[in-house]
Image (cartoon, rainbow, N blue to C red):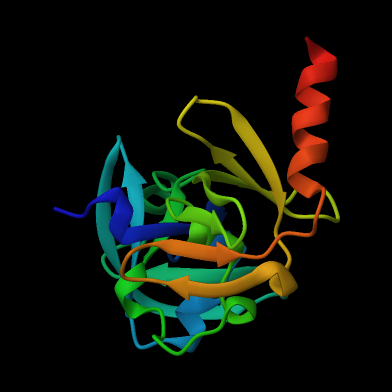
Length: 183
């Protein structure tokens, strides 16, 4: 059985393309093209299920047409419409640097600052604006927003799922001041 901590989200199947069972795939990470893994993991009715890739071809820098093994018609492909696609973390190159990984890879990691210690667990990545943010939840179940900038990252322990950062002075204080103003 595949566990959530063994995968990370890389995209979404959109709609069938053509009549041969191809799917339009919108992705945030092209890791499937850079590794030797020949399957995706899809969330089907709340269960993580592997599906082998028969072939794929890129349409743009964020979309591809995917042909899964055993899916030979548009009708069969329709079952994958709006299905979230995940990638197994064990196939991510051990020597990969932060700039070669999708920010979504870090969901589930704990973040520690060199000066302030434990900050929280990354529960989500907000890439809806020009400045991508890690959304952390700390022990008090408060959300903390941290900019996802490579220059802040000082180390990544993939085995322990920890990111060590050195945040600029005042960044954490600004967040605390905003929450005090809200009260």
